[in-house]
Image (cartoon, rainbow, N blue to C red; front, side, top):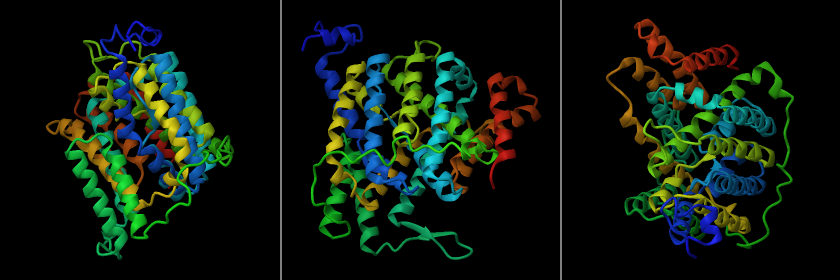
Length: 438
């Protein structure tokens, strides 16, 4: 299909120096590198008590909705999906540790995402984002990566609860399930090293088949069927507890994680694509910011956690994707996933757990960019990373950094380095610790 066709004109292919075949190929690569979310997200949310089948359908519908919107409204090659880290925070911290229902958590996500949407449209979101120091942004990515990695180790049985005095210990590595998990991780690592597109997805599929062969997981009776009903999660929102003081820290954390994660991935992918201007800003950023946040509103309504631009979109960008046609291709491929539910929902933790560990590997890379020579930068960055993992709570680490950063600059008489928006985040963070449910 030539660039002067209607689809070429719709996505301005000539203007962006790309072609239809290149955009389609880029969309396929992006899909292959992020399709694991169809398996991993429902598996994590099921730990919160959500029906896995309905969560899978909600995940796919959110990807389709957000990515199509990104393609049509923003004309960017970014895929949108429920974010890793946010889903873990909801399942393992909000629901399992703090005891809230997943229906309450979804209501909190809807409220926080709606607020971020308002901030995106008004430009206030850009103001707050630009106020966050770059070192804290790097630390956020690293901390979430280690948190997700720990979940992967725990889900696979590689790391388990220990005896008194030693909270954690190595799992029974000679057992069949753990050996299969180790095999799955090694396979994924090999695929990554060989730079094979879709390595995570391929690793999950091969490990799942091995689980079937060794009877660690049960083979489904059917591999293709109609999508699982979304009724168990659709609009199942409970707002009662959301409006209480006890839920305030959760709501605050969801809000902060929402716009922070979206900002990082969006700016990172835009930089790779060459979309940023000389000052490092994204021109016409209101549209992609709006798409990210509004996709979260949609996701909460249908039954999944905070959505945003996926960093795996960088893979498609490297293949030459530059317009919304890449994103539209991704959404079309995810639509096909709706009919593979019987297979996708029986994937065992021994298959998706190694993928979580691998995601942690990808996310830890920014640690090399943190300024280790300036302690006013290093100390808050360290606490963000450490407390996310050691407290099993992403929000605690995130907010700790927002408190320590301005304090460090204040006592060293470098308060001019603190942006006005950072003081707003500081005040919100102090409120978090005041109202946090210990």
